[in-house]
Length: 435
Ligand code: PLP
Image (cartoon, rainbow, N blue to C red; front, top):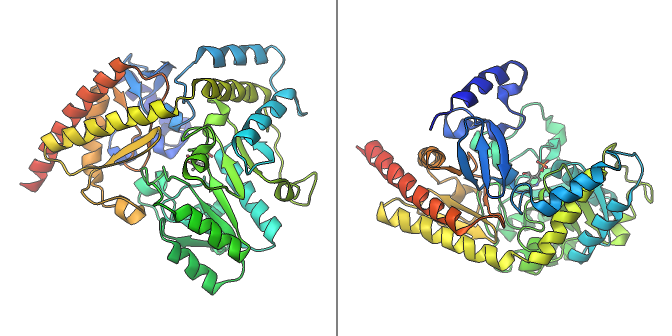
């Protein structure tokens, strides 16, 4: 296996792109080495420019839940293209996608489409402030909610792998209304309310996927919701990653909790740039043109993106793959733990529906500090051996692996062999480090 063409493109890319990428986690910085350049993808596989083929567990960081170039989705996109690419006026696709989403999430009467998860979340926060008339927002350390100024503190994802506490260029003033709490720790939320009566709400990933997969403890979300209600504050659930992925009604359906405001992205665009936020009528009626909270977008509700979203969600509804995902994730968990046991590698595996990831630690991972006990050097060794064995996983310890409906038994066999081989390499690495 060679990466010659990727190397050539990488060096060319350094001239006019920052680090030859358009999103930092794609830079492979935390696993050491240079990024792969991808040429194409189909079904469960992705191919780089050197012709190497990988079983894809990145899936564009979540959107490609049906695998790549699903026939029905492609047909819908081609059909929509014939009518034009963008109108600057509402088209019927927006109504259709909005209806599917509002039916899936009982807490949403209305939805507003935007172009990314970042936009969805920053708008949701503005909305929470508009509705409550309060300024402060609580977020949990290790949860990532996009790169808007106010939320770039104690964020997981790329910041976690680069070990950055926050981002340069974010003025102190921009984060002075952001309060940090610990995931799975209601007391840390209550403390903030004891100190301030200016809190509009709490934002969280219902299942965190940006510090690796971290699952909420039993009752955590329900108790949080009840507490917030008692304080007149809103629960903003960021389902950009989990929406239509954990279940058709998102992690909220699985966990039995209803958000005041829900943020969506990734899967709802079927691979195109779409985000959305929604809530019950009394909250959404604050948004312009009905209310005084301004938020707008030239390409919002783009007709091609809507067509991809509608067909992706319709296919998910039809296939109902969620139980299958659980079974598949359980198999991968067993493979990971089995390989770790054989090679005596400390490993913790967390999973939720079609999201899974291994942490190179024997500590139970329930929050960001415990996630950070993972040995990221071992992860780097694991990552590169998986690449050599034909598996594409996120190049970061703190990103979830995603499953698609396109994965076959053959892919799973390849996955098992690759994981065993990679775990052997990790064991060798850990041994040599200890000597
Ligand atoms: N919220 C969550 C939970 C995410 O995982 C992400 C991206 O990974 C975002 C928000 C930001 O979405 P986007 O990258 O589309 O701006």
